[in-house]
Image 1 (cartoon, rainbow over the protein chains, first blue to last red):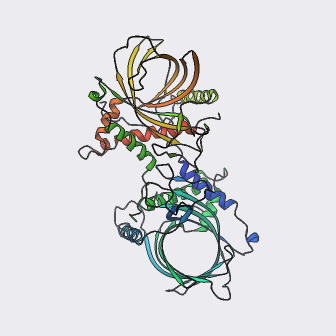
Image 2 (image 1 turned 90 degrees about the vertical axis):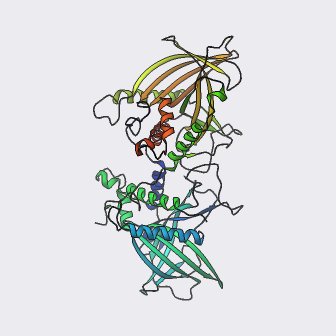
Image 3 (image 1 turned 60 degrees about the vertical axis):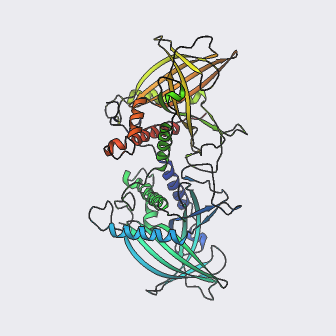
Amino acid sequence: MSGSLPPLSLSILGVEPLDEFILEVADFIHHTIMTRPSNEELGVNESRIEVEAKVGTLKDKSTNMRLQLPILVETILTPGFDVRFESNMTIRQHQHYNQQLNKLHVTSTQPGHPSSPVGYAHHYLIDSFYGTDRDGRVRVTRDEKTNEVESVRKIKLANLEIYSPKRQADWRVTVSLECPVQHPVGQAMHTRRKDRLSYKHEEFSIDLTQVTANEAGTSNLLHELELEILRPELIMSLAAKRGDPNVSEMERGGFDELIRAFVNNARILVKNAGDP
Amino acid sequence: MSGSLPPLSLSILGVEPLDEFILEVADFIHHTIMTRPSNEELGVNESRIEVEAKVGTLKDKSTNMRLQLPILVETILTPGFDVRFESNMTIRQHQHYNQQLNKLHVTSTQPGHPSSPVGYAHHYLIDSFYGTDRDGRVRVTRDEKTNEVESVRKIKLANLEIYSPKRQADWRVTVSLECPVQHPVGQAMHTRRKDRLSYKHEEFSIDLTQVTANEAGTSNLLHELELEILRPELIMSLAAKRGDPNVSEMERGGFDELIRAFVNNARILVKNAGDP
């Protein structure tokens, strides 16, 4: 009898303890949303929130090598800690993600799969940038297949870096505002071409992108992986109800539920990073 | 409709990602058990494994202040990182734990409590230490109420430190061997008196202890909190079956289940540390 485990409670309190990692990410995103500049302050008519996680590498600025801290498992860095995040990976890692996500796209439509189907789309996009000021800069994106054109000013509000020493990649959460603006006049400063595989699952998009940037006569190829929450209006609505005692418990907790799935997905992506 | 959250899968894979923190602790304990010295190597007839978590403070050796790393949430330190762990807290924190645990002891026997009852016992113990060599040293413990006497050699095998910057305390996991030995002859080097409140829950004991140490004519009062896995034979049996393809999935995963509850309990204790 002593050899096998009797039924065990989750803890002395009978519940899982709070996951302080997920709560920290949710607090960060919520705080950034709630303290964002108004459209008046930005001088725009409209803005929508963008919450995304980028998979890449945290680099020590002095050595240009991957960050090294005396810790064994993933953790969140203190904002202001002087580190550089590279939103890039090797072509081999990119191909590895491509294979895994294609496989998931196929298996997710088969009976018995434990989650809803993962959609797939292939986009060819051209970004042209106008203006030099970081926050004033306008990005014009043209879809090469549909010829749809969108002009936005993107204003980065805050980043949170996650160091993941057990994995081949780190990640960064970024909260931004995207403000639709008029198509700018004049000459684009530089352009980039994006070959994007977009995998859609429920409220999220996983975008695996090859970016060819053209600037000052040189061309530069980057491999990016981003996880984005698809609906800005859902984020805003859930953020407004977070912790509100006048709404139902489910509505009150909706924001944290959304961020929980967001963090889970980011963790799964980072865990599955292949060898460089 | 856009305002509320539709039912959401746990992730793109439909499952929670692996908790790398709990897995790291389980791997550490399992590795330490599997590579422990034999009774022959130790020159003893018998040994039993002890797995415990102590609540205390990680201190920077150069400043004697609490460790500071540029991170926001709990994480596991790399073994070998030069830091000191103090198994101590203020009397106020000790009283705070005492109140909370007494309350839990009472509410846990009431209907509707989500977990099994928490037992309670008060022990007065006197430890006498014989010998000077750290691993050769023998501890004789006498229970002042029952007059039961136990002589053991305790051999510390390994520590794992957990830094918890959001909380008022850090913690350390220690794996040791306790070897029952003959009562030593001669004079004790020093003694300590332990006033211990012991809260028992399922496979765990939470020991809140006031330790008065007497050494070289001075007396020193410490306040300790330890979480211990109660049955060494259960730990050994589950560790042996961990990952074994020839046993049932439940038996194979029993070790990690036990460590999951152990980590959950340690996290709950640390989270509830009061102000110093």
